[in-house]
Every structure is written in C-alpha cells, then in structure tokens.
Image (cartoon, rainbow, N blue to C red; front, side, top):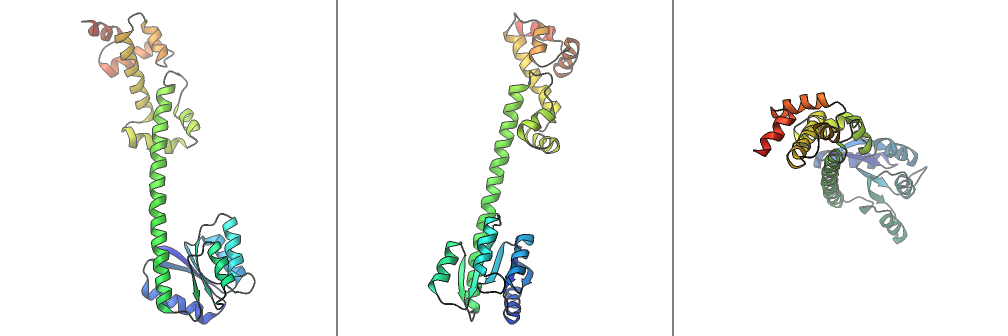
Length: 246
C-alpha cells in the first residue's frame, strides 16, 4: 500500500475525502489528516508520504509553499492539488512544481478517483523503475567485487575487510553478496582463486619454484601453501606439476 496524506483546513472536506478513499481504494493507506499548512509541512517531512492530497490555500503555509519547501529538502512525495481558485497562475505554478493534478472545489467524486488512479499508476511505475535500478546496482557491485578479488588475491594481507572498504559496504553485506553470487564464503572463494592461479603457474611456468608460486598466490608461508594446495587438489604442488608433464 502507498502512504497518503490529506491536507485541508475544512474538516468536512478532510473527512469527506477520507471516506471516499477508504471506500474506493485499497491501494492507499491514509496516514494522517492535516488541518493547516504548518501541520501539513511537518507531517510530510516526518512521514514522507507517497501521495499528498492538499488544498492550495491553507492557514500558515499555502500548498504551493509546502510543495516548494519539501522538494528542496529532498522529499519526493507526489501531490494532487485541490483549489477553490479557477485561476491560471495557480495551476501554472502547481504544474511547475510537478503536481500530478489540479482539482477544483466543489470536488467531483469521479474526477478525484481518476486523479488517484493516475497517481497510483505513476507510483507503481516509479516503484518498478527503482527496483530495476537497485537490481542493476547490485549486479554492478557484485561484478566489481569479483574484479577486485582477482586483482588483489596475490596480496597476502587482503581480507574481507579490505574488500568491503574498497566497495564502501559492510563486511556482513559483502559476505551475503558473495555467498549469493558464488555459493562460497569470502575465504573459500579467495582460496579457490589462489589455487586455480597456482595450478596454472605450476603447469605453464616450469621455471618458477614452488616458493615463488606460493608468494604470487598471496601466501607468506610455503608450508601452509602446500597444505592448502593438497587439501584443494589432493596432490602436493610438486606432484601436481609432475602430473601435468606426463
């Protein structure tokens, strides 16, 4: 459901709008009723409703002043303006402030429902666009994480925290992302990269010693490298190299 705020200084209109919306739309959750401009302004800043149904002329602050103010503060609520003034300058200013619609009093029920339907379509479209954007950003982050792993696996001090710092995310978020993408933990995937690199070097660069290969793979201790290599391949580095020469 999308959050909706009703703002009008006339109680009969506030309650009338509330009644119509509750009876006809299951897509909006009415989070409050504001009776003046200051109250409306504070509720918008605090609640950040998806849609605001607001009278243009209220005590304290006008609807247009509220729209202008909250937009400068990064609030992305959508607005449907209600007005008793059939004047071009008001409608023009409302459009400039990206109001979805401009409804004249007395409010026509069908016109109101049509405006709400348009707002709902806009909100759904925006929601899907943001979802796609988030998925795309996640995919780019996963790709960057793997690129950084392959670029830094030879650094013996490279850790989960090192990678998280480079990506500007928490270690817990990074761990979940890597597990989802690779099926392995950070240490398991780093070991996989290091072992595959070592296997390639043992096979193709015969002039390199096991010590040199272990250092290139990010291991300070050759004995530990040999232990991990055997666990991964079932052979010592020397045995593996010999098997590739046969």
